[in-house]
Amino acid sequence: MAIPDAKFITSGKLRLWAERFGHPGDPVALLVMGTSTPGAGWPDAFVETLVAGGRQVIRFDHRDTGRSDHVDFTADPYTLADLAGDALAVLDAYGVEAAHVVGVSLGGAVAQWLAVHRPGRVATLTVIMSSPMGAEAGPVWERALSGREPDPADLPPPAPRFLEHLMRAAALPRTTREQHLAAGLETWRVLSGEALPFDEEAARRLVEESYDRAADPGAALNHDLAGRIMTEDRRAALSSVKAATLVVHGTEDPLLPLPHGAAVAAAIPHARLEAVAGMGHSFLSPGLPRRIAELVLRHTGA
Image (cartoon, rainbow, N blue to C red; front, top):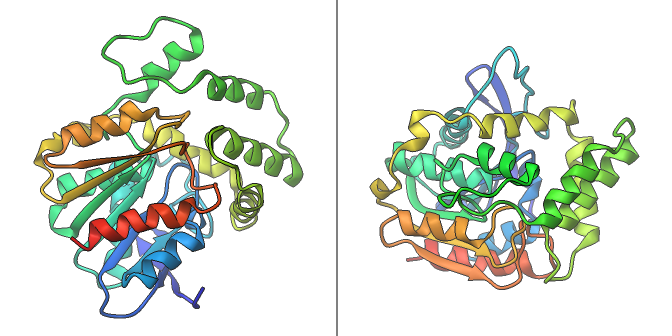
């Protein structure tokens, strides 16, 4: 892949690492990654497909991941709105007024927030393997982990296989690099589901880069805390979204089952739901990054 225009940018008191690929003058796609994952979570093949299709691409390390600054969450907690502010700071640093905003998982909630609260900055919206930004995950997870009956109003909880993995993983030691990498690799294996082949080599590269580039790999867990803070701005109606919206979701997502993506699409006027057969909660299957990027290209070319 071509050498990017990479640099540290500032968002308030923080420094964030960002990279831009592609040709000046092409429309910009801003890629917003998910929970606890740096910008490298967007596979190079995904980026290359967008660039070859005539898009500039910006990806960046969230706060608490990669080369970006880490935060003492106890002293300085942050919310989804703060993560959205980081995304806007990245656009500002590259002089981009509006971008095709593409978010995955937690990044999909950030993308929704931008489309609702900063609509002028969002040319089109793509939400991948995510849930409505106002959905309260905490009670759902607590009921699922405790074995209590779900509330009929809830979106479905994670699949039993993923919940069992979480309980096993909580008991594993993570004091060495090798232990961290083994745990991360197994998490991606479970997240990817069982229907499509798992690209173990790509997953290993991702967990190694995520660990080795971070000054404090444990800080990425702060995203789980931030994602559980429900603020009024997250409850804003998605019906106000004016940007053309594509929702992409896997039929075999073990973390956020397909009804989560369907709920996003149902809440946004004229949104289109693309259910990807066999896809779990990752891009870690051979050929999948290019396939999803082609969906984004078609959507952003409209």
